[in-house]
Image 1: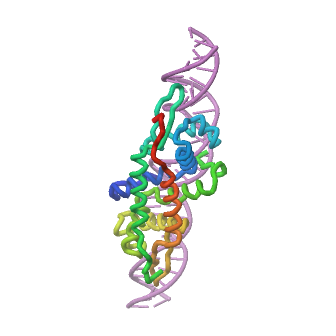
Image 2 (image 1 turned 180 degrees about the horizontal axis):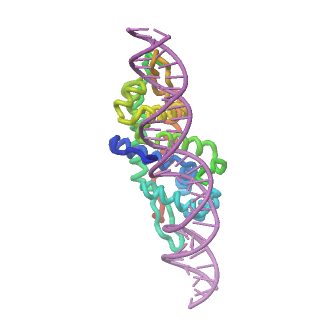
Image 3 (image 1 turned 120 degrees about the vertical axis):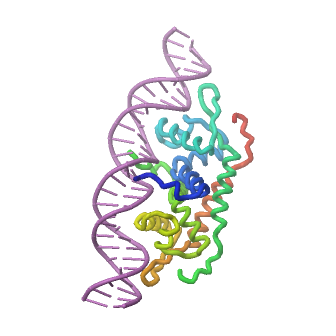
Length: 110
Length: 110
DNA sequence: AATTTATATTGCAATATTACGATAATATAA
DNA sequence: TTATATTATCGTAATATTGCAATATAAATT
């Protein structure tokens, strides 16, 4: 065990969970927030800003890149990362759809 | 290691990550979606609907309850769970705030 | 009281995540 | 070419998560 039974759920549920998973770490939230402000940044900048080791930041960037939320372009020796606008909006819409599914509570039993 | 260094991040980042974490499993997404439609349901209903063991559903419900996203009221032998409106809106707003932090890309390097 | 029904908890095995040092890979500068 | 700077990957240790059988708990019914 220790493995999620993805076959029991539909693609929307699995996708939403996957997007949530990549947001489920404060370092990755911090990286995203940094990119929202700075528009672009590289590994070294984040190492200085967050206080995690270079290998750790690199790993978090990889996970963000794997789901497509950020993209990196080689700029000489360093790599510039930035938000992928299309993916960002896609994720935003998926979460918005979930959150808007809530109707005023006329629930009698709680 | 294997433990998140929460002390490196601010409360907003840690909270957002914690909320994302509870959404980071398709079963919990499915439970939430079920509650959004049905307004209320109990463990046994979910066991039949999701196809996971009773103990597993109970565990997922516990995690959802721990962050306050759902609440349960004892109704005879069973427990009726439903969305907690205040918490739901709080979480919704936290995510909305993050997603709205993105401005049109005038980023030159990617 | 004994049985049934519904849920929670415990204990355990399998797997995933987090973090970092060490090292490799790549490109620029001296 | 050698040195420097930046990033990625590998290996490893510590911890977390997922899932379920077994069991415990609690309320309603017989």
